[in-house]
Length: 370
Image 1: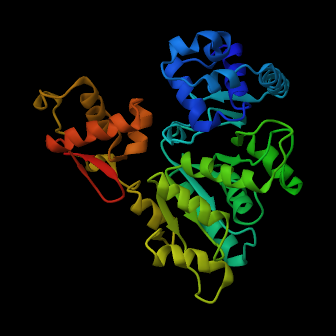
Image 2 (image 1 turned 90 degrees about the vertical axis):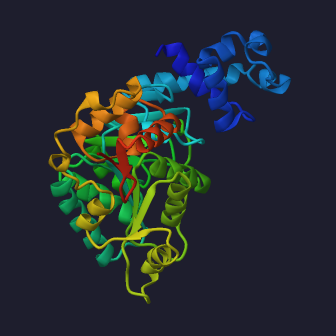
């Protein structure tokens, strides 16, 4: 990825009227953000059907200057600018229609590790919520030593989840509602700095962006989209955690909630999620791991699977079979990451393999090799 391509991608986000989906569509068609600016006068030939208004909007020297300044800021502060076509971009998030076309990251972690969760909840965490965070993360470390824990670095459940992950040597990423020139809230700066060693800070917002109210809702879609599952620990009847859970459902991701006493203010949201069948009830990390089928032992897969038996498999189908044979039961998101196949194509391939009697679907959206 060249410097100019990164700058052009950042600039594309600064043009009013283009929007996230519009920017992504333009990049998909041209396969380059730089072309949109350097060959703007040719876009009507390069992109049949592009509106004259869009071509006019792309005539924006101010957007390019702002992008150049941001890229310079990122380089000086050792911040990675990850565009949507980069290998390092969170592959789970890439499959979401409203994914950002560029992310800014400071830290050290792999967004595409095989297991990613997010823990969210009220900013007014009780002792009960704090204990759940601590116990869940501690037990999860034993059951899934390589899991990545994502949250929003906010007061309450978010920060307790991050700190529990740090104590248990699990990578943890905080998704911010502002640029990387600040930490909000400032009282969490020490934790944020500790996270840079094993995890880090991620945002779609440029420096000098204030943590305005609407930015937190935008932040929540990244938290949900880059994860396999959303876990709500405590929530009142309304709150950001419920928005994250709702977004996760819209992305067809798993959602779980810890129940609480019916009269507790900060358990009402969780209890409602469970009552309305919007989240699975869990009481422990073991419950969660079983629900996700992450406890499946590859040794239980018959070792006598012979590739030569499946003589009608395509190369991509065989690749999926090989992954399932080597790694055991896997979710579609894990297969997408491992096989480097887009999720829509992966769905079709898995359906074909199921029809051929090569795999079957288990509870929790896991696929098992027969």
